[in-house]
Amino acid sequence: MKKASIHIDKHFITGQVDERIYGSFIEHLGRAVYEGIYQPDSPFADKQGLRQDVIDLVKKLNVPVVRYPGGNFVSGYHWEDGVGPKSERPEKIDLAWNVIETNQFGLNEFMDWAKKANTTPMMAVNLGTRGAEDAKNLVEYCNLKGGSYYSDLRRKHGYEQPHNIRLWCLGNEMDGPWQMGHKTAAEYGRIAAEAGRLMKMVDPDIELVACGSAALTMPTFGEWEYTILDECYDQVDYLSLHQYYNNRANDTADFLANTVAMDQFISSVVSICDAVKAKKRKKKSINLSFDEWNVWYHSSEQDKKLERWCKAPHQLEDIYNFEDALLVAGMMITLLRHADRVKVACLAQLVNVIAPIMTSDTGAWKQTIYYPFEMISNYGRGTVLHTLTDCPVYESSHGDAPYLDAVCTMDNDENLTFFLVNKDLNDSMELTVDLRQFEGYQVKEHVVLTNPDVKEVNTEEHPDTVTPVRLPVGNCSDAASSITGRNSAVVEGGILKATLCDKSFHMIRLGK
Ligand code: AHR
Image (tube, rainbow, N blue to C red; front, side):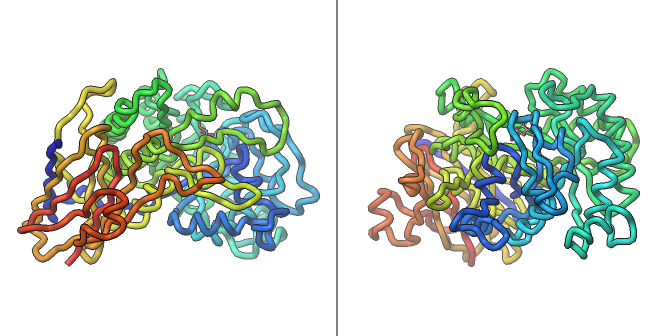
């Protein structure tokens, strides 16, 4: 059995958790909107056609912010097509995903959905085929009370009160050659600065996210970030990062080691933001918005067979397995470990499209990745403590990878929560944490997500194959222990002791 130890100190704080790191994403893509959150002919739909079963699951995930309407889609989108009487809305071709967009769901419907799902919008503007003027008009439509053309148009559409959207994305992945209206860094930097300036002239209280690279592997990575920030530093508040991982090589250990790559990606982008800050002698820092992250590859071959110009096809419908859930947990731990600079993050996406929630005619069901997201989003709040991990490492294509991914958060009542992934595929790990600063603390809850088969999935027919198990605290002989063959963590002599079985994710909560 491997041994690991974690060292924390209540005064060594990485940063406050910005709850917006538990964001997600709804794009007009595949069945995310249509048949996902909106399906008027479904028995699960409410009066507005919004699927109540999906809203219920989204609420449990506790997602404070949802990015909308894209993604690649936004780079050809005319937001005006999706507002006003539905009978007058045009059907248009969407060149991002080669489908027909009916525009039966748009901005105002999204705002209604967001309220019902207890979330807030992160709105993206089209800086691909459009520019500063349309972005400015959209802010006016959404955020001004009335008395101007676009704010009065919103009122005419039945929305008397402004939507007051605070967080805005200046386009999407503008460095990507696949993007409609793709730009060089210098071109994008200028348009982001100009659009941002006009948008903030309409509403100075909004926050803006500039597009970073579409992935760490983009050939222009680094140069892109530096050049665009050099142009739009004063106008923007955040720089975006996007990253999807895959296990096409079918090497689980290497796949799980992607948290090392993600960690380095975040540190590199922080360095670039700070280099531009230093060069410009600025006081303001640019923080990070990791507004697309997930595993994405299972559906790629299937999607190549799709016919063009259909409506809401089954597209990007990855079915996630247990190893994906482990990596999602590891990625969330990595985001938390950078709580000082990562202030927004969006799991891409939320429903049907590379998503934790799937829908069918018989209801909505949870993929494997739903569970780590739910646990970390609900309990990883408060403050992140600097979490020093001492454990063996293994070689990976990303460099040495620790067998243990770990982070500790402390909530307002000074309860501690540890999130832990044992990446060892064969061996358990004996973990100890010296709790000398936390006298009288006991384990309150220990939940584990594990499975003997890393390729195990949940399906519509069998949605509960991979689900977390709550270990009975302080009592090794009852039902759940004998099911899993595992005991919960304990505190003995001021030391937290836990056995982390091979390939497992754990949430251990402690308090007085
Ligand atoms: O999330 C799916 C797509 O991935 C988004 O539309 C795009 O921004 C990214 O390339």
